[in-house]
Amino acid sequence: MTCLPYGRQTIDEDDIAAVAAALRAPQLTCGPLVARFEAALAAWLGAPCATVCASGTAALHLTYAALGIGEGDEIITTPITFSATAAAAYYVGATVRIADVDPRTGNLAPASADMAELSALARRHGLRIVEDACHALGASYRGVRVGAGDSDAVVFSFHPVKHITTGEGGAVIVRDPDVKHRLERLRQHGIERDHARIAAPAGPWVYEVQELGWNYRLSDIACALGLAQLAKLDRFVAERRRLAAHYRAEIARVFGDGVAAPVELADRESAYHLFAVAIDFARLGTTRARAMARLAAAGIATQVHYIPLLHHPLHARRCPGERARPRPGVDHYYARTLSLPLYPALTPADATRVVEELRRVLGESP
Ligand SMILES: Cc1ncc(COP(=O)(O)O)c(C=O)c1O
Image 1 (spheres, rainbow, N blue to C red):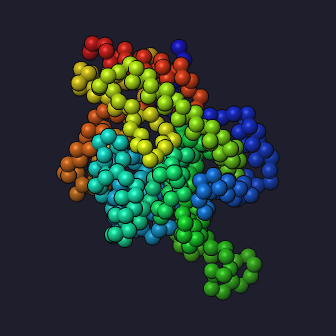
Image 2: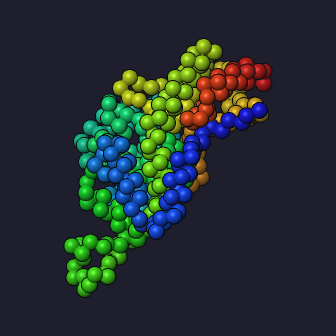
Image 3: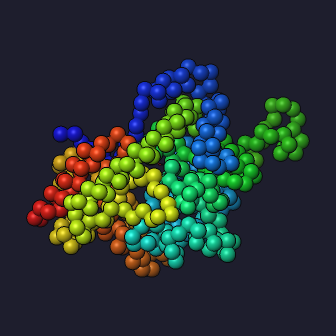
């Protein structure tokens, strides 16, 4: 029996050759591949520039810091996200407010789930928008690639289950050149090397540690892998979209009400990092735990994206004022969501098998 993970990387011989070549190069880190990967990523996105770093989490931390978010500031986010979206705010001393989500899409929903309305809201109130787009490389909204829009910053992750991988890695897209400069400084210990930005440099060796930063660099080895992967991103996204369409057709064929494919609205294209279906377990007379265990026994790994932030002790402790507020959208979404296997190497036959097994486990008596 082949076991299907819920997500995994796609590594070809050209990726391995690119990494091997990088290992033979004079510089394993701080070399030329970093700027090359940044330029290629920005060009692919249609963004002015990109700053790569050690992980998506590091990218969020750098972003909040470079935008000057700190003590006394608040970030407002969705609880249907990975811990790092909020944890990075704690790193800079900011507090976190937890919004509700649209029960159908699982997207952040202060009043509506739309990016255009979020942007208008932010403009009206002088807020900044940071898109945690770790699931959205290759997606587009109203014909514009995520990363090429007008948000203050957009963050990506290159963790192996994501659309492309560098092993671990991340990137930040910003439009403001001063913020870009600060991202680079913070990525490297807060070190400033530009003599035009140092009061009285005594000689060519001089650099200044101007603020507290971190080592969040991405190595040339990782960037070599990123460049090779980026060259295949169009194909990876097309394969994910084809598989999603196949899943959608199979779900419509096999299930009536009770199991719904993810909603993809007409003005956007998902890059399908996940294929998160909504299952009314209670109505079908079963539980998610039982269904997941039975799928696992059939060699099919599934996941839940995500356990709402406030269910975790860390976030409950950090956001005590947020706990009491009702979030009906979150409750509805979390009770039903289940991520089925999806990655470019999955075959349509695998996806059919997943749907057939799902039918079997949901139809079984408890
Ligand atoms: C929504 C979201 N934000 C942030 C992260 C953190 O990215 P990384 O694992 O690269 O640190 C992830 C990764 O799982 C994510 O899915």
